[in-house]
Length: 160
Image (cartoon, rainbow, N blue to C red; front, side):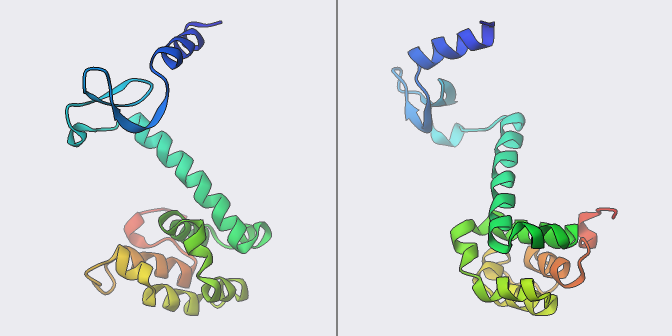
C-alpha cells in the first residue's frame, strides 16, 4: 500500500468524509476529510486545482445530460459551437429544468436554429444569466449566436 492510500484510510477513519461544511472539535469550519475552512464560512476558499476538478465533474455531467436530451447521434452531428451552446444550457439549468425546454429541444432536432435562438432569448434562463437584458452583450446573446450560426461567438476568441 502506498503512502497516499494509507493516509486516505487514516484520515477517513479519524476525520471521516463530509460533503458539507461542519464544525470540528475546536469549533472551526471544516469540509471533506478535515480540510480547514476557517472560523467563518466566509473564509471558505477553494484551491484552483479543486475548482478545476469540480468543473470537470460538472462539465462531464452537463455533456451527458445534453446527449440524453437530444440523443447521442444528433449531438454528434451538430457543429462544436452548437454542442457548446447546448452543454451551456444543461450546465446552467441542470438536466431536469433543461428537459422542460421541450419545444426548444424539438426545434433543435428539426434544425430550426433561428427559432431555437429566439426561444432561448425569450426564456427565463435568458433573464437569469443576463438580468440587465443588455441586448447583444449578455451570455444569453452569445449562446443564441452559437445556436443561430453554428460558430463560436467572437468574444470567446476560439479559432475553429
